[in-house]
Length: 308
Image 1 (spheres, rainbow, N blue to C red):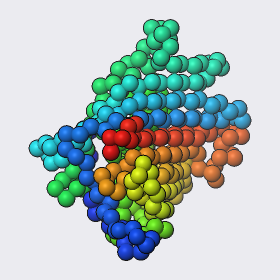
Image 2 (image 1 turned 90 degrees about the horizontal axis):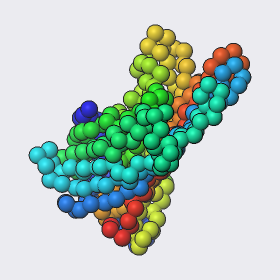
Image 3 (image 1 turned 45 degrees about the vertical axis):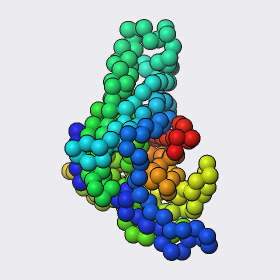
């Protein structure tokens, strides 16, 4: 799957002239060195709470892995190549009234026929690769490999986890501003396309405008380097195509990340996604039928800071 033209801004956003005394204006600029590798550690914890006629069930899936990234010059421009390595999958869920647990590092479970689908998912994770292509201006022009991450455990609601682990690699650039900003300023951006795919976890939805409010919180010093601390949040109500005026679910995204100003990339990030029954329906549905809420919390950080 290829995504074209829906991402931008990694090289544009200038800090305004209202910075604290002694701090020079810097660019939010994607500026990695060619042929240099960076190792990131990523974890995602997804929880599904289901209520069936008043009885609640809680399932959980955890994924941890490393992401090896390398910047190369290709025919499509400057390319960030990401390879997913050393995945570990943890799961806890209810099946036929029984609590089940799975750990891909457990030798006994690793050989059990019962978990062959989980082993297949992990094998696909080890082979997963995503290429992010930047044009001459530092804009993200195209992404190859999206959608290759498995849904995990062959359960539909786990698709959110697969999409999120891909999105965390390079998509924070889409939350950067297109105009000069100073600490305390806020702006709005459209929800990146990869997150819009998550809106249809339960089927097609009516067209909706989804904007995310982003805030440049402050400048911070980490590892003797200057970073911009940025946070964002947005939510939207979802309705079916057949009944666009009757929302059935709500999707919320929130997160924060540190943007290293000299090298121009994210070194640390955290993001929470929530997808569940619309609040106006929740009380009724919980008593009379089936309700759900999916929460996915992703964290990613540069594993070796000394390589900056």
